[in-house]
Length: 163
Image 1 (cartoon, one colour):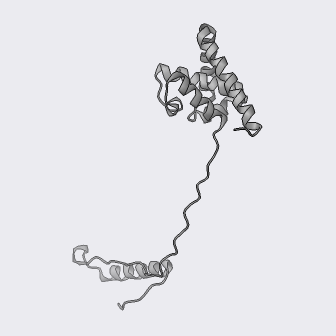
Image 2 (tube, rainbow, N blue to C red):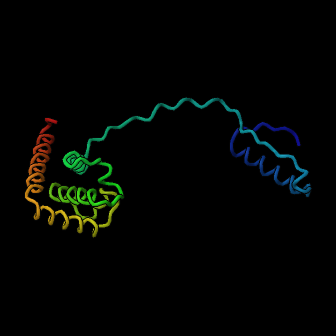
Image 3 (spheres, rainbow, N blue to C red):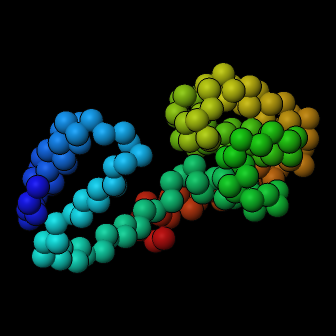
């Protein structure tokens, strides 16, 4: 078999198939066959691709709410949307879902997707938990009402172009 220069992937593939066919025709035991190394064609070097542009995306309202709840309760915002289920995180997540529903009016399915692909019934249970917690604790209700007011003011300023 003579040496052939290959210029495309198709030619390399065809050469590989040809070598396979000839090896089958030898009917030699595999131990006596020498490995065949196919070197890809050395074409001209590919031009350097420009770096992918970095697109800065503004925070969504839900991200702002999660960040604010995390700051208020001293919890990492990523933990609020994580799969962990300890009591402190479940309560913080419930309050964040409640505020998201209050501020955006989104459906429970959409809110569930925003909070780690949770089911809409999980969101409904979280909303009930948040309402129960706010009904039982005046201090928590006052803190959440103040936070809700601050978030609404921030949103109004942002829509006017101030932030």
